[in-house]
Image 1 (cartoon, rainbow, N blue to C red):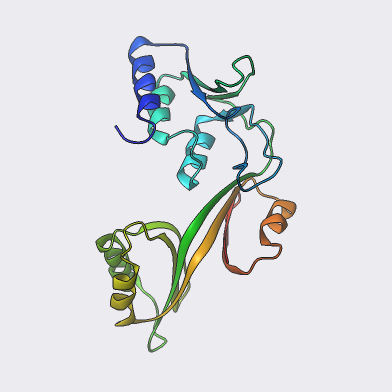
Image 2: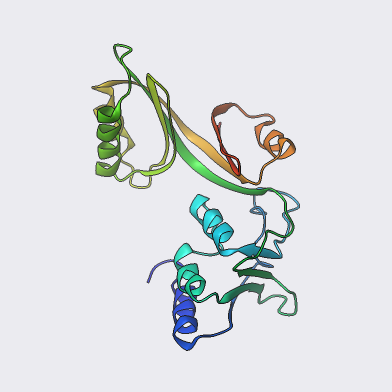
Length: 222
């Protein structure tokens, strides 16, 4: 069943049995606001909503897979993530109408990213036809897309080269675009960011791309 298959199986059983809750046991205290391998002083999230858990998983948080949450959300079944190393601890509760507690920035990092920046050879606009062709090539060479950003005459995409097809992709792109490629980049995503959280990521790094929405900022650095 792939990654997190046992968690998904538990969620399906809970759905069929109309359970009140499901508890998943991990080797971490629960859902943390950051990966302790990369961030010191990672904090436990006591409560998060289904939506927030899905958002975190989408951006790369690995504790809970989105498919585990889908059947639970349908019947409003609470999910608890606890540590088998400390079973008496409260862990994290994921449920409906649950606000993030504590309300702090949540950091997600992806290493070994590739940032490709494309611009037209004749300074013409990057239009829908160009973007469609670019995505067709990304699909052809099995690139996982994590961030996109475009302007009138440029298009940037942050990807994962999981199948080692980067050279072939670049060769194809260079026939139609001016191409700048940065390898070994890092993608940082911050949910519920503030200035301090952004500064923490940008300090002593070169920022190649930055994209903000009201709840999320994504920063590509080397």
